[in-house]
Image (tube, rainbow, N blue to C red; front, side):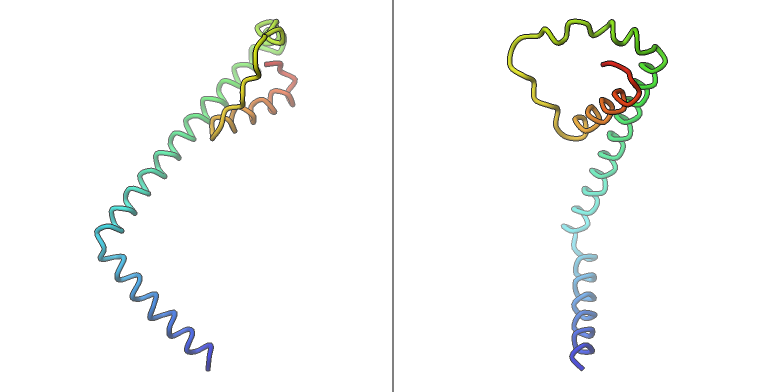
Length: 107
């Protein structure tokens, strides 16, 4: 009996909430803005991933010897260490660094 009452109360609450939100202009505006932001993040993420992948492909095509020659002397820098990049760009940078390390390409 307790489970039946709980299901009925849950059904009634869901009906009230769904109908209330569907008629709310504020919620509709929130839903549209959220969807557009998610689409924007998806687009920029896909573009940056494709750009990084193309860069990796170019570096692999050029070869590891020329990549090593371009970065000679980077260990001799002075000054404080540079913190890693944050967010999706930082993730892609670290991810590509690991892929380069696996492929034997020096960066």
